[in-house]
Image (cartoon, rainbow, N blue to C red; front, side, top):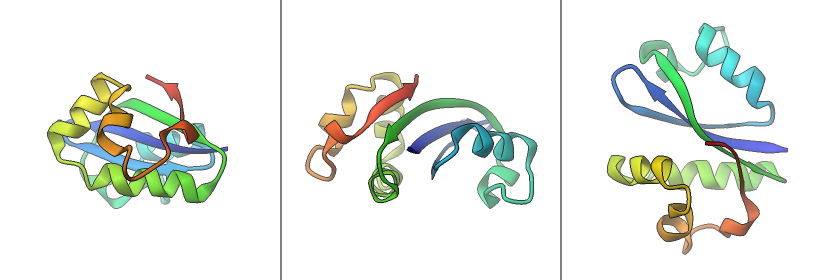
Length: 103
């Protein structure tokens, strides 16, 4: 399984990433381990906002890419209303390929 996730930072920014081990990756972000993303070293993470699970790396990467292209207001809407995935990205990804695992 692969995961695409969104994290909230102390400055209210949103970090989007993907991984094949969500628990390990979150630990890396929160503890600022060596493999932590540069962005999350500078912008302290406060919480996991939402995560989606999918079968393949390419699908997780594709969702991550398209979420990162969204405007901040659309990312906020996606966090607060997970049904917005279809509305915001239906022309870009097959939303039926993703299942919410954390909201």
